[in-house]
Length: 75
Image 1 (cartoon, rainbow, N blue to C red):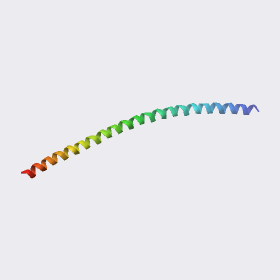
Image 2 (cartoon, one colour; image 1 turned 135 degrees about the horizontal axis):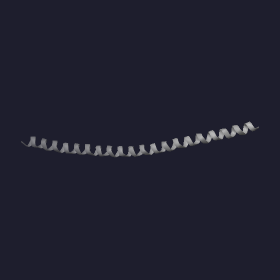
Image 3 (tube, rainbow, N blue to C red; image 1 turned 135 degrees about the vertical axis):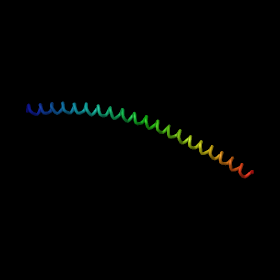
């Protein structure tokens, strides 16, 4: 019977060590996921700024093109 008690305590020690390692891994994963979320938010804001610039350039290009077309037809 003594053997079973030693095996149980050895197993519980190994399990607690394993749980510590898993807890550290989970903390690392959580930190990494939080950093990635921040990066994704930054990328989205940069992308939205780019979309706004493109829309502005299209509008300005359309206005310049319209003005040039009107000037050609008026002459």
